[in-house]
Image 1 (spheres, helix red, strand yellow):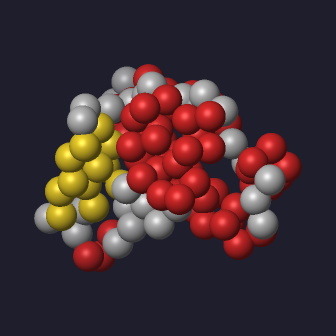
Image 2 (tube, rainbow, N blue to C red; image 1 turned 135 degrees about the horizontal axis):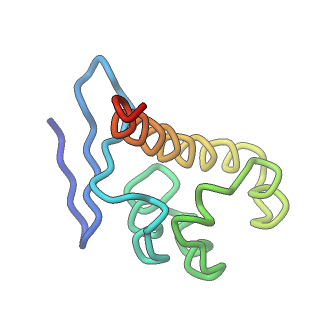
Length: 107
């Protein structure tokens, strides 16, 4: 297991068969702007982290970002925008996977 801890936000990669999947220790809907910046800094999009700080993007806003929004509002070229959206999708998938597991058996 590969662990990386920065402040209150901890991100873990699972095992090699699930390469790229995140396990989030905290609900991204509750992330502060600083926690979003920490996440972006832990990815290959670290050079874009200052944009999230400048635009006050918290966890809730992060989960609402789409490729067109990223391109238009952040004034990014297609390549960096796609890479950024891939990182955002990783957070969304981890969030949905966690909520799905949490809600199993409630019906």
